[in-house]
Image 1 (cartoon, one colour):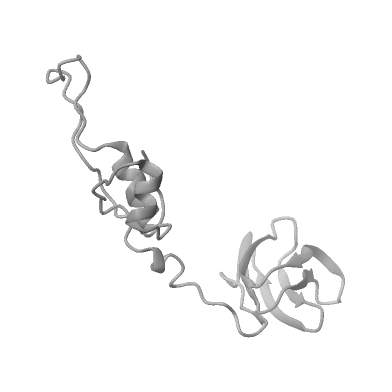
Image 2: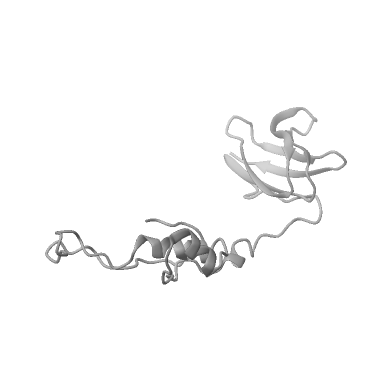
Length: 167
């Protein structure tokens, strides 16, 4: 079984199966019962009690140190407190750059790239978005070198920044 995520304890549990060492039925001997893995996930990820796990699996199982902690899942995630449009990176760029922005309340969001005359070069986002931190790539490979503006526009806020495309 593969588990992926930042709060998963890395590594392998058990050993490679030994085909020379089979049980009396000719089956591979197992080190861990798959229900131990399920019990571990139910307890450490979903926060279920031992009684709840026993009700589901019909037996007590020793849990394994698979998941570090259910409370740490989003510990480094910060909910934004203000609308923010960060400086693109890299800047200057060629041919693409990343634009990060933060939305503190669910809003209609529009991110547009303009040339220095004010013509729209590209609309990167034009949709409703939930609270959160976002990033989007901008590909300027079809544009001429120069300075461009990019803006974040929401229901009641507009912020703009400059970026430089150097070919």
